[in-house]
Length: 370
Image (cartoon, rainbow, N blue to C red):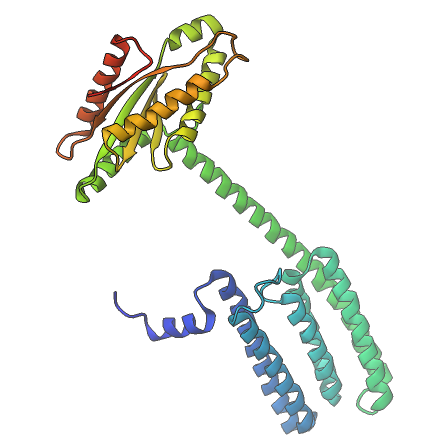
């Protein structure tokens, strides 16, 4: 296998190959990059004389260190116990605090930083439920009001009251509008996720319908034919034995005629359920047609297949069908054969079929090896 491209190796090192952590780390690195750009804007403010260098250094360094700590915690798997691995709500609250700090240190350019409120609301859409989103908006505006009042008190020249009020009123107008839009987008996103889940479930049901018998939930004939071909090829390559058996429920027509098709269907369901429980985990069961079932025994010789079928016979003999009919007893006749690597699938199934009819001719309720 050729080595991965350099960029792919860097992405794997930074973001890991864990899909859940990868999304969280991507969000965190995006946040970290955003703070780097904020620091760059702060440097421009220092150059223009609207921010003091010491505040840029303090705020920029703190923002980068905190977000770097978030990245390290997620990358090292220290947040797996949290319900939200990206720590979205916590990161968002920290971002709000840094926004207040940026406003408080921007002097004459403070009003320009209010646009950051909008980004917080958009991020909150993904971090909070609808009620939590509105609570977050209210608390963010309260925190902004406190920050404005405090800055006007300690620096009335750069934070005059009338400009503070105008900025706060605009924030109170725009932030709820963005929150309302975010709520609509969140609902649309939830609806899309729900539709995707329903589509996946419908697709899984269709896939199951394509390979399983609707009544017994065992594999259908078409899918079992494909499995036989695949298993025979695999067993031939690895020189493993492969056994197959055809089973027919004894006197099933009599059950249908005497007790009705509803009882007959229930007998088929119960037989299939018992077979799944009694056969081994790797054995493959299918409804071959009517009351006939086919069992494929991977890596199994005929004597072991007979032993598995005998356990099924014993389980059926002990099973109580009296709720369907007081005298009802369910048995089956089975034929077993080995599938040869140099023969067609149909030839082996035909041989198992002949063995099954021998079992019927010999008195039913028995297993015959061809």
